[in-house]
Length: 202
Image (cartoon, rainbow, N blue to C red; front, side):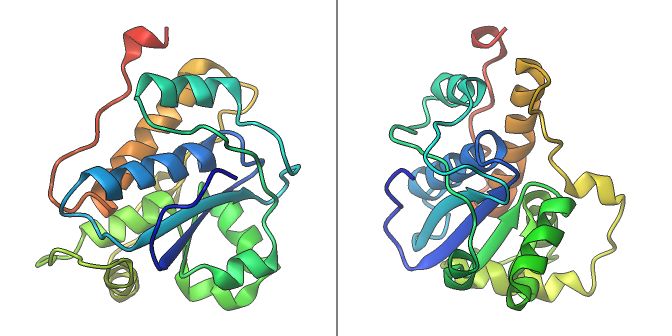
C-alpha cells in the first residue's frame, strides 16, 4: 500500500482485486479531503480487495486515469482484505453490493458501518439540512441516520460496475462514478472534483 493519509478516522475501500476501483477511490478520497477545505480533515484512507493477491501494482488503466487527473498514487501495491483490517476501519466503503456482502460475511461486526461508495454518497447527500461535516465520524453518523429513512431506489445505482477485462472506457466511467460519489460525500464545500479528461485517455 501507499502511505496512508494523516488522520484518525479510518476509511477502508474494498473491491474485488484491489487493482482498479478501490485504489482509484482511495486516491480520489485522499485528494478530496486534502484539497477541499470543507471536507473532513481527519480522514485516513486505504484500500484492499476481497480476492486480491498481495503486492501487485494497480491496473495500468487505473494508473493512466489517475495520472490524467494529476492524482498522486506512487508506491501503490495491492492488499487482500482481512478481518483485522475491517476491525480497524471506522468506515468500510465497497465498490458494489457483492463486495459489501463479502465484507460483511468475512467480518459481520462491520455491518452497520459498511456501505457501497455510491450508497454512502447518496445517504450523506440526502440529508435535508445537511451540516458541514467537520469529521469523518460526523459523516458516518449522518449516513447511518439516513439509512432508515431514505428510499433505496434502484439497487444497481449503488454499484460501480467492475471494468476488469473490459476497456479503458469502462475504467474511465468507473472513475467518473467514483468522483461523483466522493465529491458528494467528502468534498462538503460543494465544489465538485476535477472530471476525467477524456481526450487524454482515448
